[in-house]
Length: 269
Length: 269
Image (cartoon, rainbow over all chains, first blue to last red):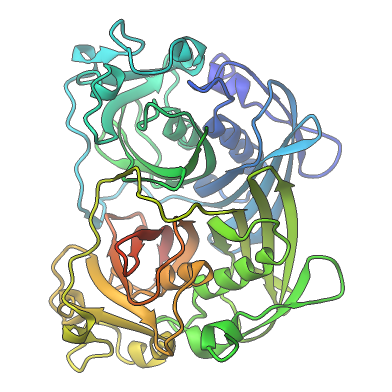
């Protein structure tokens, strides 16, 4: 497992005090805005929290992003808030250079076996097989600010495949910031629950023409993902007052919804 | 302002130490499950946080519910995590009887003036005027567990009006846990940003036939609400593995989306 970029780059080591860990933020998960991906930092928090939780599975994690993360050593301070019979709660603070960057809170439990869902009113995104899809970066990507896809080192680590390149990336925005796509780690690592916060936040921003910064991200983890490609749906419905939300659904190769995320992002001037 | 139930019941008083407050949880905001409403406790946290924030408006608040709240004195411990140029972050812990009940984190800023939204791909729920709608409790409510609407003291404080009583409340579930309704405080207090977390969590559960407990609730506050009735839309898309999410949109009388919330709830045995 140590051979995969995600596992190496989210590694946490117990430090002096109880619940304190060290980590190393790498520049390998930067988004199109050139900043360390928030989902990547949240995955580090989840991994540190996992070390003290009496249950194996994160079921919901919330992260607030106080300032941009910086590449280099980071400290993660965790504490167990409550351990119940079927669920435990904890919080984590990720600090860079002595300053808090992420405030995360999570609930852990044991997710049930993959029995039939009781009610689902959605189908997974309908996409052609990944081999028939368009990969990023594509030569006809024109709409993002120049150089931003090159700057997005995360695209060397996370693959995206679209049925067709979204209009927003071809300079022909449809007016509806929504997209569906396949995703997976480029190095063949299958996604697990810990990887889903990163993958939920890794998608190409659906609101293009503006750079935005994630203020807060909530991820519900609903089932352990089956191996293989993940099918995603991203949509933004409200861009107003300098903010927008972004909702992402992640479905696994067995057709099960495995994560649902929502973020509030601030549009930068 | 002190004359309204919401203001009285969310009052916080500075206690000994910096950032510490006392509050009094009342039994006037209990849901159909007989528990103190999570959104009510989150509103208390937001109000306490507002006392130390250098910006007036909560823009996003996340609450984790560690155990049921109990009627009586509560302590709210708050701390400022970061104060930036345009946004500040803080956290709050609400404790009952010395035990932590809520862990909340929030970002505050100054919401913009009510200029035109840049992009909205939704319209407010289309509902007949409130006077032509069905109010709760209604005589033909049969689907909720017996006595649960009587137990729901919140319904004496918060009004709901439906175009027609949802099938789920008439013992004829449509199979789609979704509803649209008007809401407001029963005593005529207009909603403000602080009240929206409560109103987002106050709606009759859309997943009926099961009692569930909120694990986590995130509320985005997008604009200061205009006076008058609020139009809401609630929907649950995924009930699986013992959990379900619930999304709520709240639109004000001027047709502006003022809040968007999502919760993860655990279905109780």
